[in-house]
Image (cartoon, rainbow over all chains, first blue to last red; front, side):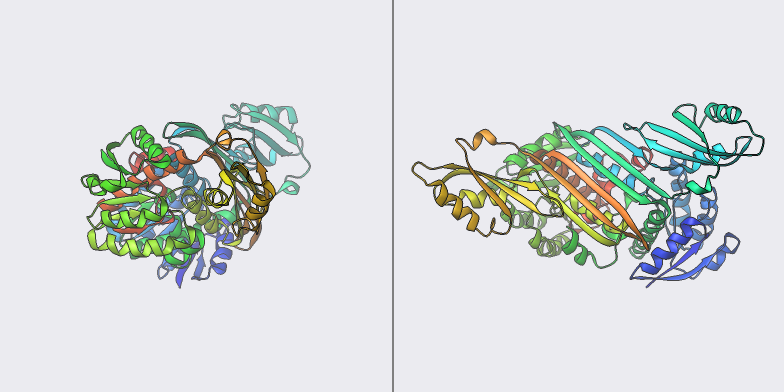
Length: 285
Length: 285
């Protein structure tokens, strides 16, 4: 049995706990608060379910002690530098860190890489939603006069998105002023954005999300090869599950002596699954 | 540059040649007929584009000489035994064989494995078509009174398929007799099958094909996670492209000293792509 610890117990930590308990080849070594990071020592692999900006700190501490980690770090433009920094720590301490192991970045990244291999020339569009954007929600909440907010991402195709921003106003706040501030914010200024006042943002709460990932391209010299990947999912449940599946891959890579920090495009799908390679070949190939 | 030889020059061999020529990191070492198998020695990797039943013979000869191979062996129930037999030859001779590297088995297998990792409980259905089924076409052609035939696979959902069989009759053949023989054949007896007489089967020739692969399942303990992969493609062009992308993976695994026979679920998507891991992480994760 793979002994899995969970560090951080928000939405993702809770979902990861459920996925560990449902896994036939894993046991829960414990759920720990950030302050208690070193209590994770003794686990084979730690799921770092902290806020994304704290991932590097905790993953580094654990990797330096030879413990495998998995995180769902999701700031796309910083992934390569996180990978590079953690890779050195892992290599020096015989550990494996699987980084950015969520659904995007994560499983969508694997699909994008596969589709590039199937049609090397062409265009890929990743369309998100309908679903809540964390970054845009935080930006809307920060506007003066907003008590609570929810920014929904609505896919319009070809990677273009509409922002539907639901705001709960503080007493005495002026809607037109709040609306203007949101529309002027750099998070919203470049997209079609609609601001709507509501009585209760909590009443709209829904962790559903979706993806429509499209690639039209060329295989060899043959055009008009069309591929599409769609999903509608519970966001934290899928993130937690992806992290747990990647925990398995981390332990296997370590067993093979393949140390380092890896993104999901560097993992073989079979290493995400319980059972032997032979069993999975018979069932899935 | 990776030196790629092609063994066999049918539809797949021709498409593979185009994909090699389009690859930025490959050069064509030659295209050879089956009789001339050993002329492939000197290539880094050989694409075995022979009929599927001859794949094992040629791949074994080449792997035994330490040469990497890629094939698109497509008899699902024999894949595990081909893998096992070739694996021993590769391990003993420091070579790598990527087997069943087409779109199904092949890239669809990678998608099925990934979806199992995202939602470990649930049902996956692979729906094929519309497109020509080689096996069913051969079965229809073998019926007495049939000069030429084409069996199209039409997806009806949940892995159920309709067979549309277009037959060109020999002079004097009786349609009703031919129809009855086809409907009684074990290839057709279990599916909804329609037999249609046409003047010219050649006039219907079209190498388009499609897939609709669906998984509805459970991540952790959260139900209603829905995933779908669709494609509409030129069949030999995609098969040739997949083989060429896998040729890259074979050479990389050999460089790392990871010898053996592998199916595509055992490959990391990034190994299918030109460029460095770092470049692909920046572009695709």
